Amino acid sequence: MKTMLANELKDVLSIMNLAAGTDRNVENGNKVYFTGEKIYIFSGDAYISKDLETDFKGGVDTNLLEDIIDKYGLSEIELDRKENEIIVKKKRSISKLVVDDSDHQPSIKFSKGTEWRKVPADFTSLLDQAFTLTGNNFTEPSKTCIHINARKMEASDGLRFGIFKMKGMISDDIFIRKDFVKILSKFEPKDYRLADSWICFTNEKNYFLAIRKISITDYPNLEEIFQGLKKSSEIELQDKIISSLERAGLFLRNEMEMDRYIKLEAKEGKIHIFTQTKAGTYKDKFNCAEGIEFEISINPKYLVEMIYYSNKISIGDQAVCCETKNAKIAACLIG
Image (cartoon, rainbow, N blue to C red; front, side, top):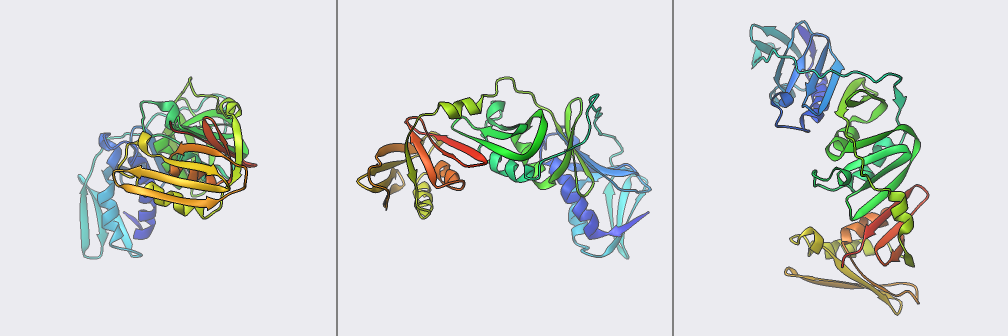
């Protein structure tokens, strides 16, 4: 019999459930397994485990177990197994969950010469930033993953791209699928190590995470693309333009992705914002430096995201760019 606080097990299950979200089509992906020495979830593409001693084995429905213990809060509960059921007990309250006795743990073999290495201190925060630049079409892996190598983390969806400088070194060439990024962001890894088919991580709470390796041979050279962009005008945008761009974006919510654009025109010391859709028309204007002239069409969301890094932007024939000490961001123009 295992005795523990309900909240402690709930916290463990909340981390376990990160893996379950990667592939709900895998039969065992919604079950948590107790082995006697540890607890784990394996979805087929992601595996999370943590040492947890019990005197029983077996798997049960993760969400059901989590919902049951959620009702106990800080109370102490007992976990036990009898025949084909795992029992959750608190005094007279007894829940019995049907057990799955199969073992779904993946075979993880570490490559020769590999070792655990620290991830950079800003690894998780940069993952969140790069995530916003990835696409959603998983048939195009190079547009739906994050690329990490040396001191760089980079991402692109084909219309935007970003290159971020890390505060540390990743000496391996790694691609991380978009849906894995969400896991890592919550997991907050501290160390990583490469296995035969896996990228493995640990965190400060002593959880172990393994995600499937992916290999992409046609990933674009984003540094070369950035250097090749012609930058004809430079402008410093007012911070209050963000609210105007967001209002313009409201008129585009029902448009196809490629039709989500507004027009920006700079002339005679003014920037004019304009968009027109079936939903209506929006226009606004702001002061800018004299002598700046351009006329572009761009997705306002892309521009708002760029201003997050710097309100000093460069406008060229193909894209709008910004460059800071630690980041390079570009968004393609439309039309």
